[in-house]
Length: 314
Image (cartoon, rainbow, N blue to C red; front, side, top):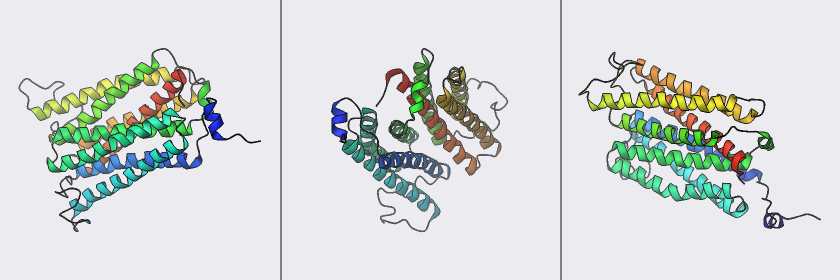
């Protein structure tokens, strides 16, 4: 005699996650990462106003044969497909897995934030790329990405996770690192928006100085604040990685993610230097944002894994 999913749920046992939702959540996570990268391409190529109106492009459904318009329109297309994937995740979460709060809650939060994200996209165009609005637009994208990753992790979490142990205060350190990284990434968008990306033509110094002199112009101040925030984040992430790798035998899964986090952060910092040395070459500016989104993903997953063990999520 077989037991249905409803009796299992009523008995306090969560129903198994279907292969369809696992695949959809993974695809959506990758697609949201792609959306962030394409948004970076729009920004670094100066295509943010390639379509000066919204939601149409020069009053047309399809863009004219202009490079900046095509780049901006591609971002809108990827965003539209991403929205449909998120809607599909939410529908499947509520239809099939409403007994798993850590699938339903992140999925629902995505659908709540999604209209705001589309609205911010319109405001970015209508305000002609006002830097603070661009930063908030990126911030909401990072929140959506984190929610998607959390739902994906819970849907695909391995049984081996239950055996992993963590030192005290590990989760608060991870949460502090997440807040710091969120601030770093969003203020990085302000640096770009204010035209401060090349305010310091050398690296790691700025015009040969460790600290900007009194009366220094705003772009240099923004660039140096950004660099010092990177240093602070490096210390925090080093502490996270050190805690995680302290006993790798008991934490094999999180240890692998910690190593990935370290590699991605070093790559991010290195690409930031190469970006300056190559006079802001487009390929390195795009790679810089892509690896930044990768660092965000690795840290969110690491925090979710640790929280799962400490509190238990289903």
